[in-house]
Image 1 (cartoon, rainbow, N blue to C red):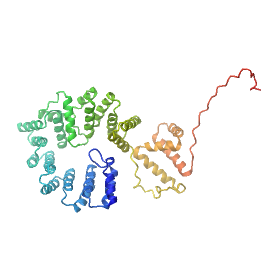
Image 2: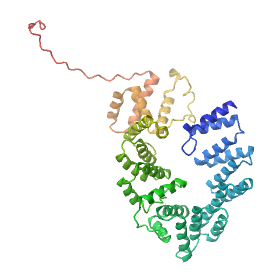
Image 3: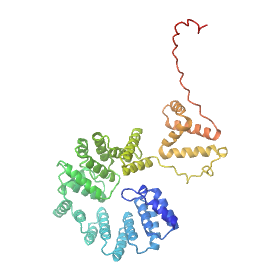
Length: 468
């Protein structure tokens, strides 16, 4: 029990939790170990179900959920996760059934009522996409029994509008009523296109403009700073919906980029916009606002972080050595200003760019035993370990270690001989390291350049004494 308590304490520390409470991989491993020692901790079951669901592994989430419900069949938090897990897997009827059971245990639970209503609306979206308007209307009517907020009312009006014939007066009335519920403007347009792209197929620029016009949103009207900050507030409240080709800002993208270049927002507003766009994986706009803010406030490390993080989000890794160097300097400034949260975020970005290779699944019998007997180490096995390590980060860590083991001069010489062929370059370095480690080869020391000593003038009175 003490071991389980210690593991839970470490796993749930700030070092292993994101700003919104999401566990990292190390925390998941520790909580799993703690649960093996103490399976009757309901909170750990809930945390692990959330971890697997948020990481997209619904199978593991269901397995963890079933394990938790065996011990706590009536726990509200676990049943709430059952509803969310079912919704994530598009099992709308199952989600509704679980939510109704929850309401029997906790009738005043607002979150549960929202989950029930949204389960019906999600089913309505599915029916609209399948061109079954009558079935969709039934789901919307059922959702109205559970949802009461202004935002939800707007969503119901919009979905109901899309069950009506195109161009009909009722469709126009309901669509415009939805925009009114959402307050109009850019934020309402973002909500509308976000809903459309989750409902219909191929919502491009032309279709987006038509849907906005139908709802009474004038896309030719110039955007305002207040409207963009209102959009940021809405994006902070809504969960991300990310998919290939989805762009809820397609109509306004160029104008928003122009506003970023104008540098008319204060520092706090720029941070907020960068956070909002990155939250919804709109890395292009996040990078534009971060780059503009870096020019205006070059000493603020938060904008270095957002600019590099946006490029890293697009590329899947830190883009360049310059970005890596800038990020290191930003982390140092964050430590100096005692901004611990920013320093930790930068560290997580470094860790994501340079993951620690996991060789547990590789079939290298005895190769990674500790301590390693170099005399008995199979060169081919060691070569395979090095080649696998290169795959994890494109050879970045391998090159760093190669320079330490072989020396910078030899690595540069091999690079020149390979004439830009990166595969041949890495292959040659692997050969040299295997030879050095296994066969005891020592890399030659770099040749020191000769020092040219200028001849000294003879001291007066010595004459040719030194010559003689």
